[in-house]
Length: 151
Image (cartoon, rainbow, N blue to C red; front, side, top):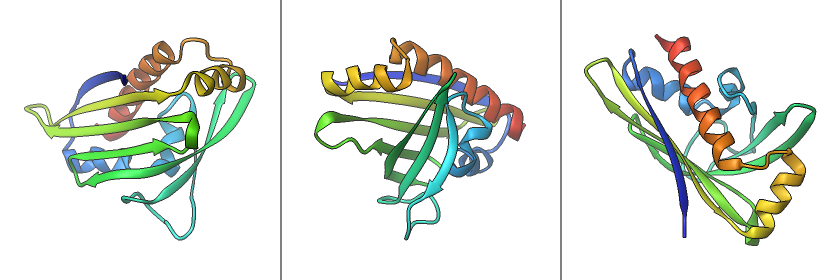
């Protein structure tokens, strides 16, 4: 069974302006408390279905890298990508955008599909015991930082 955590924020900017930020994974470190950005894996140079991105992450003194692959790219409505962890399971990150009276309603979701082994390994590498709570807090901070950058 999937576990999903979502947060939503209304941002005073167009969906296109917000879209430009949430799909620019190289710059995500400017907004995310955990992700520090990273780089696209050749031949990819930008977000797209099938594009692979190697991300750098940190939590206090711990650092680690991950690879994700683009799942959906429906500009400026929906962008999602999946953690590449093979048989250990995965998790998906989803950004859904829709016009609002203020400008753009953004929902960021984390869909946890990790096996117990990946959950345990993740605690060792990251030092994060409650990944769901941590991600909810991080998503709130990320959307707040994106709003500050684009408004």
